[in-house]
Length: 289
Length: 279
Image (cartoon, rainbow over all chains, first blue to last red; front, side, top):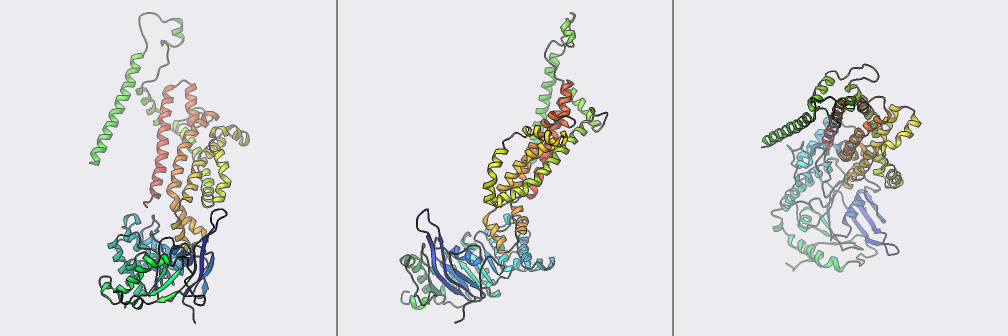
């Protein structure tokens, strides 16, 4: 069996406990893969280590055990092949929106001419709908616009893998919706491979091909990998009327409300099968609607 | 709205100045020379006819003295008789030299301390012991080691401006958010590039605040240092005029120290505004 483009094997993170006590294991036995061009979301309650997993994948954090492989190579340290969109936009506040993007482009392609860097950056500024605001500093931009710049910066370096840590968590619902639409559009255009953390079930259903469900921490694990059965192109306003939406939503909510707790600390995988159980919610929740 | 507010404030400032100077002038006129018909006593003749108590010059005298001095600020009529401009230039020059040296040492060292918790812990005891020492306490040691009064003053300025810059740099660098560091890491910036393109601009407002505190302290200390070692400079000048009992000159010098100090501070304030950013 060929390995997926990116795969995570037996990942574990433990923090040393207070003197003499057991170390605190946040998550363990985390296994999953992501194919090229796939959009994968992970949902779980706070404290299950989602952000740590993402940081390990980005190379910003180290795991206690296990590996992350991308494109046949083990992930060690950060790389321009993996772009990160941070939860709180993390723009350089003294640079304009455009300069924040060119800064990233310049570090990816140091040999490029000034004009080429600018044009390339402008393309992504336009893609996120910020044309006309490119000379503004982050403090002059709204929360949603800042996060758009963050997304433009991550896409502009054309990473093989895009990692997003609750990118819309700090935004109001209306802004969040319009950026989700833009992200959906950009991902369709660029066929970007994305791994994204979210707390929002509807956001996950709208954007993902697959949703990973994590049990509660400590000793959290990826319990299930839910394939979203809704055909693309998806639209936010018509999503609820598309086939499979309610089944998927019920399945996810049921997991988050009930099963994530029940499964906590149990070893949810068979020894032989490293991948989490694959579920198609249409079947799983049939009759529940 | 704002302009009328500014106008009112300016008018009030001017009114206050007139009232204060007027009161000063008037109070002096009231005490001037008890010229009467009776002859002066021997004591009165000795002390120049005043009835005791030293006389402060009137503001009008100070102003006319200031006009004379400032109309030719750079004259040199001998090693002990130079214009106020020359004296101030000596002092500013020493401050500039000591201050620049301090920046050269304090900013890189502060960077190191801010980046490395180990360096911070290792150097902190020394900093805490050295920092509260009055800069003038170093003067005898400096004179003994350097054997040059001008260079010793520069050293004293160096030692007094190093601490605010060092601590503010360390504080600013250590306070750069983890997110910005992570951005630099995900963009695979070299550590040198991270330091100059991310950490330095992020910490610049804090560093500039330290530099602004340091220039203020330097200007306070140079006057005292020059009083102590003599030779030249505004501190020496003001002490010299005191020895000459030329109080008009002393008051004029005090004013000039204030004006130059304000000027130095406003340069640093402008520089701080240039690197300031809103988060």
